Length: 489
Image (cartoon, rainbow, N blue to C red; front, side):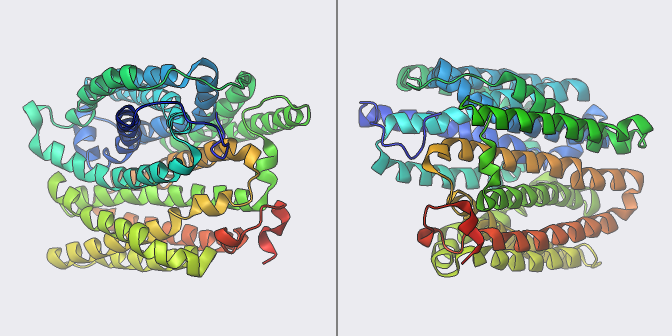
């Protein structure tokens, strides 16, 4: 991929063409994000209609997130090699076809297969967005564009459940949950027509090889780990499945050695392993992975608790996500801008404290007997949760990337996003799977299962607060030197 810090000249294009081009890629980015969170509200209806088990629902989420995460870096390399517009349109077309398949699915297995296809298509489409920004905009213009992307991405993540609730409540054409996916189809068709006309047909002038062997090792190794986490409880942990993590570890170590050898020889690889030897960046990856693990499972469990535990309709469940969206918008747009320059990396423990208070309120909400008070406490806790998310996750990329050499900025961005998506996949298969399994086994014990999940979330947040001490103290003060300076403030 083109390096986001290169002073490469922008392609000559009219302002009108650039505006339409950014509209197209923004639509694609929003589709990617919304198709994760929009399903949270749809799970009870979907599970009932397809007679899906808890672990099959885990695969519906994790299959998408897993393939999206492990193929992101490869998608970027394919764009460099075959052209950004070509890969973007191929990924967009695949996403539209997969969305159609999801909407027409007649069994859990078909839905899982189509979700995997969505993840693969998203991984081909997503990396081209940054590359097209590089091509269309000069360096001094990119910050404004990327800021807009940041706002749209945050809004898409928190508004997905609201949109899902509205669609299910409307029951369009009597199709129940299916329009959650089918609504993508006309959007994709319009975006494809515009993409062909307004996106430049360009590719990287420095085309490197595609590291297929290490991509396969990463996919199989991490896939074995995910399979163990999802299927282990469903199969009651037979001996053979407990051996899979050891196989996964062996494959990932083999991949690491191969990547290290490639980097020493100056050969292109999936990513340069030296990136993860820089403590600031490794701490940032670890922090975002753990945070996504906690947040993805919490959002899923909260939607399920509201509907199956407190008997709220999909619409009311959707409306209870509004405080979360408002809290996130406030912390990103107002509080974050004021606090990050003053607090530096200490903004993360502040966000952790806010979110711990949120978990306390949410735990109280599921234990009180008064329905009105329960919803009030959950809504207040959800709002604070959104504030915590904005304070923790929004500044993390800047802190993680502060010491990354300019030559590796593109690979680091892709690897950071991979950590985010893989963390969410792990969250759905571990804590999310725990909640689904507990409530399937004893539906009346949903409140206890929810409180247990909140305790796991609290433990992860405390680990995140500790990890934040490895980040640079202030991004704007961080000298671009060796990574070993990260903790010597």
